[in-house]
Amino acid sequence: FQSLTFIKRAVLRFILNRQILIHRMAAAIMFAPGITFAPTEQQIFLQYLIPKIQENEAALVGSPITEFDIYDQDPISTEFPGHEFFPPDEYWYFVWRVPLSPSSSKPNRFIEDLVNDGKWKQTGKPKIIKLGNTVILGKRNTLDFVTVEEKKTGWRMYEYERILEAPLFQHMVVVHIFYRL
Image 1 (cartoon, one colour):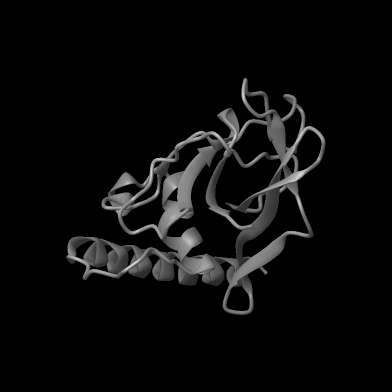
Image 2 (tube, one colour):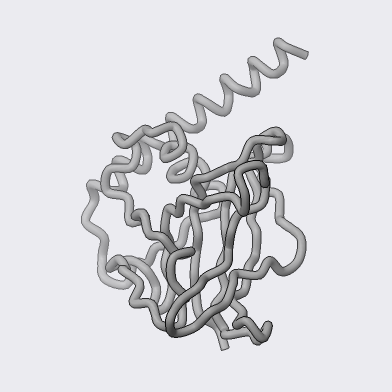
């Protein structure tokens, strides 16, 4: 089993390094008008989240994804910093999450804002994101922003996180936020 794990890690490392090289080359190219940021879920992990977790800043040069504390303010009254390649009313950020308590494995998603109190409420089951059929990259959580009265606001967020062995808490995630009626 150890040699199989070693081979999987070597293959994943090779693919990750290849994806980083492709990303660097793409960042250096001037995009034509009409091009929008639309990464695959695998690219979110391989080109953005994994390098960010590994503190590989060189791999993130030219990245349109920046850090933003979405859990510090409600999306209704927030002016999101965007990027020229983001589609209208869609945003991607690196977000540092904090647990509900020091021993909790669940993130604190409550927002106490002077304008709109609420929370990001998870809907449905997490989707497992794989590379091919065997290598698990992480999972995607779907969350809706709801008021304290549990009313949906139209704001939805996909939260991409690596899957760590319990009791480890994954602080850094990538989020994709968008508004839908």
